[in-house]
Length: 146
Image 1: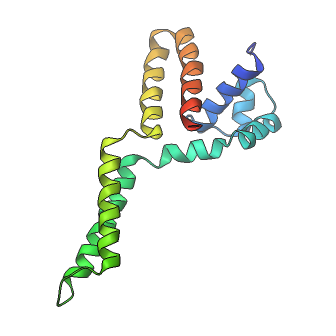
Image 2: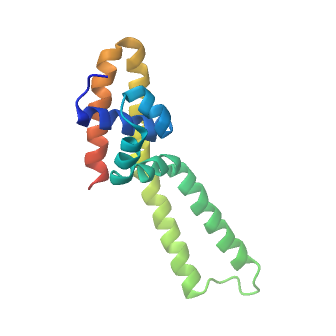
Image 3: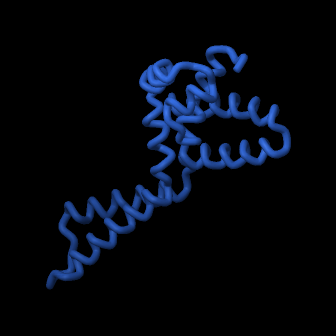
């Protein structure tokens, strides 16, 4: 492929985390052995990056709203219809988490926008898209390690 080892690794990580290719397919595309790709994936915690793409903010918000609804429905079935201190604390924490998720941008969202932009750039200028991909991956890595 003619890329430096670092660029090969960055490209392989992108193929694994965003394109969801397996090690054999990545090895074929990069010219690096599947065993090396597997080692890179393990050392770089690529599975965690891949998983973070699946857990979108919207999914988390829906789960929190479901928990809040369950708590409120449980309280409503009681004669007194009053939350215990534990339930009130849980409601407060869930509400705070929802608010925080609704205003903050997650790493998964940043990755999703970046992936969409890179796909757009591929159609316009494939060479630039490859350059952007490397830079974007470095950007994501810097955010992931904070």
